[in-house]
Length: 80
View 1 (cartoon, rainbow, N blue to C red):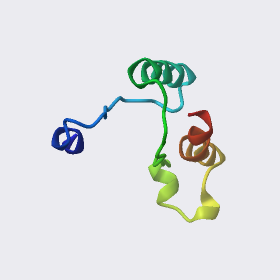
View 2 (view 1 turned 180 degrees about the vertical axis):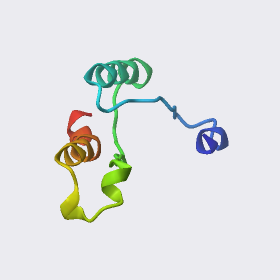
View 3 (view 1 turned 120 degrees about the horizontal axis):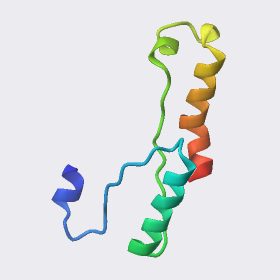
């Protein structure tokens, strides 16, 4: 990313992570522990919703679409 490139002396890294996959989350934090030891601060800015649900009124959101949006946008903070 541009930020990582701009500040090469800072400790930063980018790593893809599927927050719907518990194994990827576990592997990610194992890697973080090995690279950095601990996390002092976590910025959570993840959100997702099905495009079809976004194009309709909120009351027309499907149950599956709502579950998906909550899983990715909300539960992901708890899981990390």
